[in-house]
Image 1: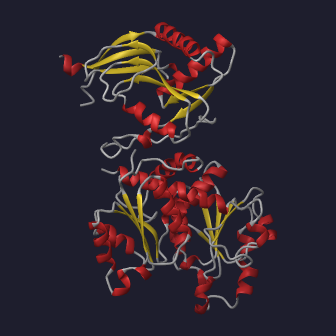
Image 2 (image 1 turned 180 degrees about the horizontal axis):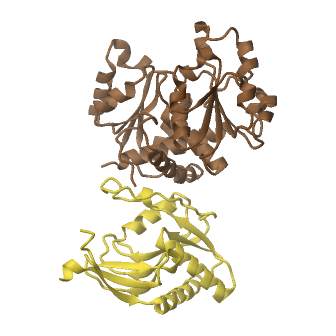
Image 3 (image 1 turned 45 degrees about the horizontal axis):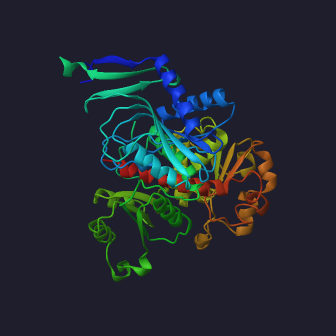
Length: 188
Length: 306
């Protein structure tokens, strides 16, 4: 299968558009929370962590203040752990601050079914009681299976359910872009 | 690569990659044990049964805590309070547990191979928590994780294992673990406590502790099983302590940043001196903490098997 599985890629956001979207989200976060003195960013592994780092940097450029930043691994909270055929790779949760008196902004790359965010909220609640949890995503592609909505969205991208949206990041050795990937076999 | 096994029976049959996989899975659980709410839902709805035919506090508690922190339900069976005293066989006991829909069985038994027999005859995942003089894999994996954390890597280190090697399942599992991960292992003790054909496991045998400890990076002291005293493996405890006890003076002969390890329970003043147990080189309590993380990682991997 993998040998014939050539994918057709169409780029939906290039790196300029990504930066603009993230800059806007940074401004929106500051506006909504009236600064960021009681805000903590938590990136969901893996893509969300790098986006959270970028947001932290953008916020410090805009307001010259530092936002605390953590990393959350949601593997142990997944609702499909017992169903999966593969073994998801466990990584470490690293949140080096008390979340209890903060507004936590969860950051992820793509919002799809909402199940990842449900797991992330459960994971977060086990670490304390945040004043508020907000959600920032670079892409919202629809098809929610849970009543979850993002507070900050980089771009809404309508998709078919079996289409694949991927966020490529410089930090992971790719050129920054958001793409729709379509299996060549399907289009042929 | 993923962990494909149904059971963990010993390290003799495990590849270095499989051991590395368990250690890697253990790492994130250290953070979980440091939280205020020490619980994740990974094994929610699973049942873990601790079946211990030999007395154990530390290992049983460690398995129990590990399972509970993964949100599994835990049941402890011990022979004094169970039907075993009424004459039920080991296999029948296990079958009964299996048909109560348990998922993981943790077994300690005085007979080598007990865990293997149950594993072959059951759908449950079986974890060997010590079988006779054979193996105690999770203890050796905790030791491996401790060494790896403190030293960066296991490969190339010189490790001395000291004491009653012949009657120690901890020693056997540690020899497998350490040699497979590329450490140079020497075993030290009186000839009465050395099994035959030890060299086949790729270790050097010493009878002189002062010679053996020279320059080593890690010393693993084995508990002197005082309950075996009647077998006259050595003339007196005092003589054993003099020849094979780890004193502060002996620690000085090892490498400067030597790690002193002990699987517990410690006989202070016998195999290891008070000032060494409480000294800066001892990582005995790190071994205990890592034990919980290793067992969590292992149960997580076993429950992921499909």
